[in-house]
Image (cartoon, rainbow, N blue to C red; front, side, top):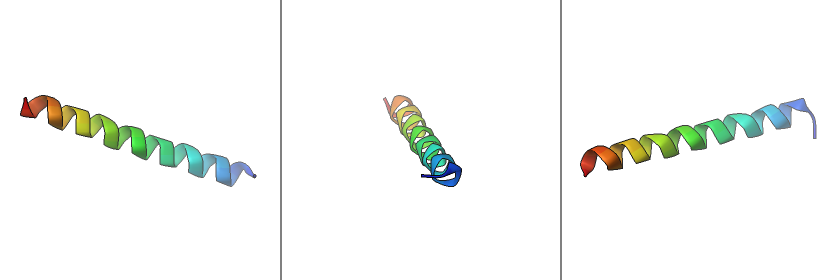
Length: 31
């Protein structure tokens, strides 16, 4: 596992976190 794999994992984690946060905000505004 090189630095490229590590950075790609971090990027994927950030996209998941951003998507999760966006979903929470949308659900919060719906209520």
